[in-house]
Image 1 (cartoon, one colour):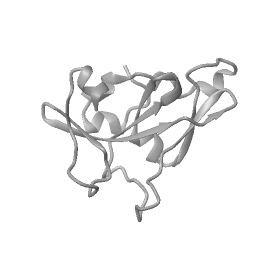
Image 2: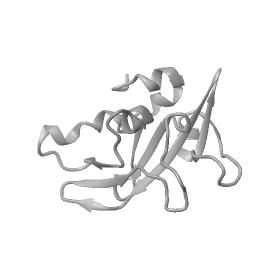
Image 3: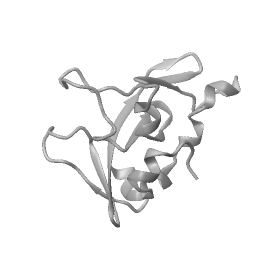
Image 4: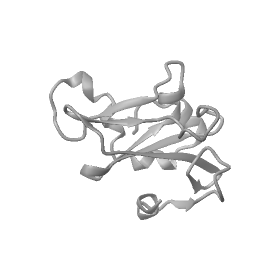
Length: 135
């Protein structure tokens, strides 16, 4: 929430644990629902981050509930902002390897264009639902 506010976005937090998202971003006519995840799990040259609800939730995340995931790689202080459509689309992903540190093989870095992609918070839900790379 603090990082989004530092980047000039209006941030809100849902009351209680009744929402699938952790943070709301309000800009103009749109209100984006952001689910925040974090990792400290170093595996080889990257960090493994899970994108599934905690064990108290009875169902998986859906595109009707979440517009964007914000993944924080704690040991290196780096954020990834990834449209939910990328993770919850036809090929659902419940975990990703993020590689903010070591550069080895190009095919491992398909999510690097989402690193610190704060501009995605100014996009509409419609734009995020069809987005593949930030601009």
